[in-house]
Length: 414
Image (tube, rainbow, N blue to C red):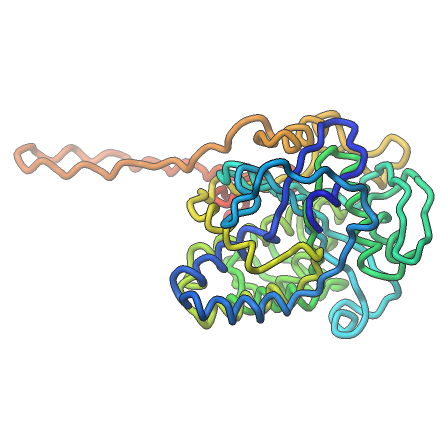
């Protein structure tokens, strides 16, 4: 899906053209390193062809309103140069085949996890904003691939995906209806989308050897198949998926979907740290394994291209991990239903800032603090009198799901 096909009426921000050919920072950076360091030009072509063929692609262009073509000639190395880009990331609760074996058989398809990924035009910031599935929003009329048209309504956010799937019977209709709903309620144009299912997520985690995380308390969630003891743990694919799906029995919160969002954000942040800090990017076998798992687990729009994403990824090569930010759109209990939520007035500012490509919270994330090394002792001076040891200051933590945090921030202490 190119940007000219991505717009709907946007009540809060002026529309502008943009294109994106990447589904996320981790995959983009990994691909760039593979291209520039590991394989060389001929090897990249073969690998790119294989990875590009892994992805399931659908064309949603006929189901969303068009946008004008860009007026300037795009940079051949990065068609998105100088433009901010937005990707809608959806976790599919598909329950057939292997996914049914993992999560239990169920009819239909739902999207229980949704994030808007924003990459700034200057490639210095990445923001991931979670949308609670229980948010009450306006769902516009959606047209399906079979010609059916749904009525505009007001309801739970994740019913947009289900409306497209139930009436259109395919991923194309489901994704397009969700895109229209996001753009209608936020004013943020969505350039591309990615849908990841249960099985694919497990494969991604296993391909990097698991995800190290601090688990602050024992967690037992029978419905999700989760059993974890407090302490530092390395979660394999199955355990990571159970951690992301668990609502009840996690030891904190109220067992709601909004509480689960915090764990999902922490998990993705831990995956980013693992890919950026370990040998995934420099170990060819691990890198290919990760990329194969990542691309093989996705359904994307037809505009996605492995070949074109390398330019964007290359321009993200110097991004600071402190400028990769996670947050949940501000919300409160819905006045009409205490079991649902509605966005607060603070959400308007977040979406407007994103649409205008300024930091979502109105300010640039603070860079990680650095401390100078201790001075060497002076041999000419007498040793000082021992003093009472100073207790270390408590570690500042951010409450994932309720507070914005970066990849550099601490969210749990073990």
